[in-house]
Image 1 (tube, rainbow, N blue to C red):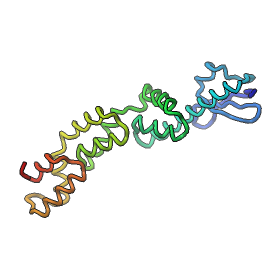
Image 2 (image 1 turned 30 degrees about the horizontal axis):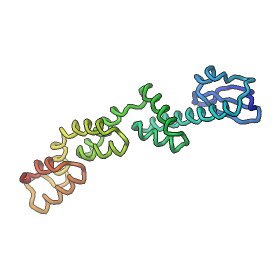
Image 3 (image 1 turned 135 degrees about the vertical axis):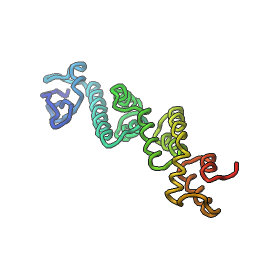
Image 4 (image 1 turned 60 degrees about the horizontal axis):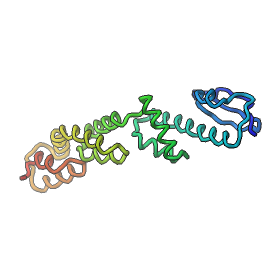
Length: 202
């Protein structure tokens, strides 16, 4: 049976503990698991125990990788779960790790949705684009819809700014109106907003 010969810090900035086995194998786990599983020098693990520890080590590694991703930009829970499944976790294991991150306040779909919506608004995109992007990131439909509705309240001003920066101040001739309408549609503004900004008939 595999025997633990040493338990040490993983070193560097990693918060994980490293288990060193007699055959030279090493596994890294969160220190909170050591006492719960009786993982100490001299402990021998059955094959079943080893299988459990290996899955927990993979989950802890995925958690650390997810935290590094979150330092570059915010992510949705669904996006993180997909990444973790790609790293080798089962869907249930990924959900457990993401839930832990959510309880710690590290990942929050509502905050993610609000941030993404705000970024798109500032870059001149309408609420339809915001909703589509949120759904693509796996934000639940209700949350995506609610954020998109808040976004929509500023769509008219944003659309006017987009058109003005591209085509100058109104009035516009027919070819310019067609180009402007196409631009606004591609940027995720709905028909009502496009009509209001360009003075189109209902």
